[in-house]
Length: 285
Image 1: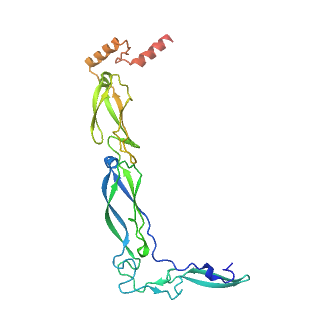
Image 2: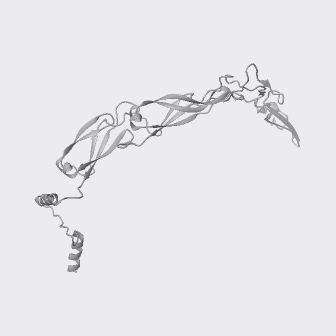
Image 3: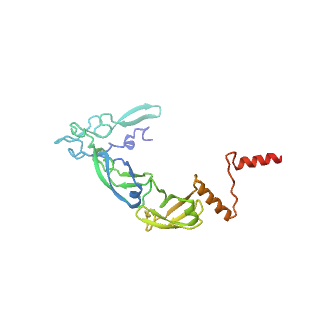
């Protein structure tokens, strides 16, 4: 109601401060699996606004100062009065001369042009803790953009992006890999040397291992980000069946199948097993 009946002072907001907090910044950092698993101190380069060292954020040239805006008298806004059938309406808008600050800079700093900050490229080192995952962000307090007028800097967020590994895939703190073993090794059993992220482990493949079997190596995965211990490593076994056999190898496999009472189809040049089954079916029909 003050606006309708002339109470302009009640709606006055005053001049805007020239010094304001800076914005946050974000940086993408690509790391290998070993680096995210065990941690690393990574050098980074950021391009942000920093405090102008020439004027220390004041925005004025050396030996000069801010001046009170003559257009608004330092209030940062100008008022206009309109008469209506309800009375006089007082409205306020930011001063276009000083942009609402209430002061002007007669002699701006030649380095930052009155902004109190300049853009520059800086080199930092960020400490990556062991166990970070893809997409996580690490906060570096007050390493972001310095605010206008030399205001407090915002924060810098380093977003982790983990590069795909040639051998392992990661699910949380667990690692997965695939190892191919010959059919004979799966049937008779064997030993495999598995190279983990930080060691080598010898594991036994039991006789009669079936395709799709999984071996679990406890505490050979990624260290937990919070707390102690590590995830597990899962080795998925792919049993490889030979695709080409010479005559002696084929004979030995057929003899082996006979000793187990297994029927093996005879393949001929005239047609395979299914074609002969089709012919037999058509003959009975």
